[in-house]
Image (cartoon, rainbow, N blue to C red; front, top):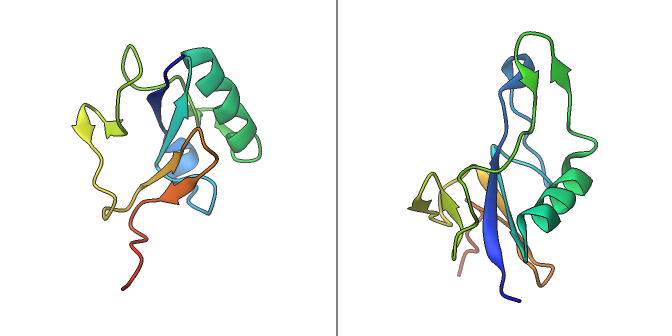
Length: 103
């Protein structure tokens, strides 16, 4: 089975975003299905899922109707040099965008 990328955006719950080595404004997960991606996300954000009475849940369902062939945010291919996302690849790699290695 082939994989697709599922993008989740973090709600500004409580008036702030949680940004660390595991989560950012966007979390993108490569998986074989939407259900698999949702399960992976739950494991990642379990400790970062505060709820705000006025703003609601911090994490919701993925953006878009189906997965994409490459990492995207709202239909735009992600630029690895821009900050704001973490990509979890099916092979176990985790890439935090904006952290371009210096040569």
